[in-house]
Image 1: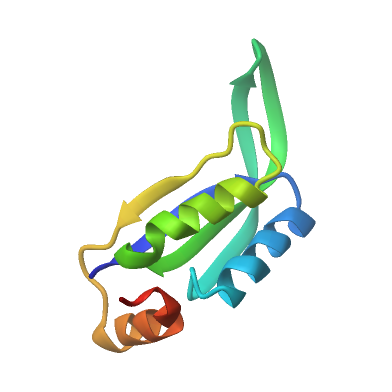
Image 2: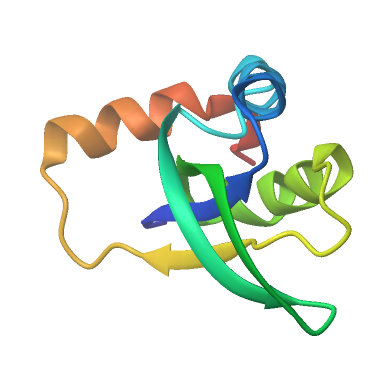
Length: 107
């Protein structure tokens, strides 16, 4: 089992907090960090420049599939970003806490 970070963006603080509270309570993520960002992208042929919230969901490889399903279910965007980053190196004490915090996902 390894450590993972799932990345997503949200339109506002309320929506990211809703998802963060659900996934941490369900122990699908040990922690969710989020911060306001500026995004530039094309949507439906139009250049968009918006403020969003970037969320980093800290989890394990074992819990990542369930976490991504829950993020998609709760996400307000029609086409949400749900990207997965595998962590190659992590300190043992943090990894132990990560595993303990997502313990409902152990076999």
